[in-house]
Image (cartoon, rainbow, N blue to C red; front, side):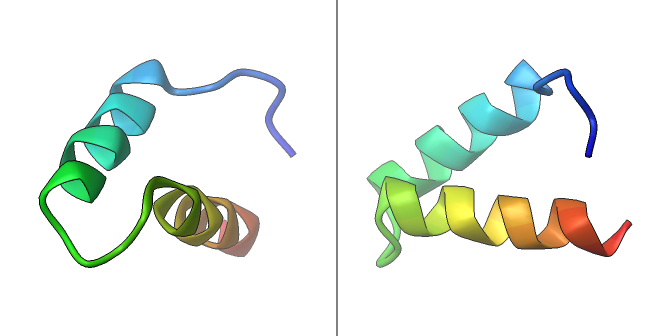
Length: 38
């Protein structure tokens, strides 16, 4: 697992969660899952 956090991606997730059906925590979970696949 990478030790750094891509802040730009986190910001994009937070921005998308504000106007989507997914909550912020769900978006972060999806991000974590996608990170594990790499």
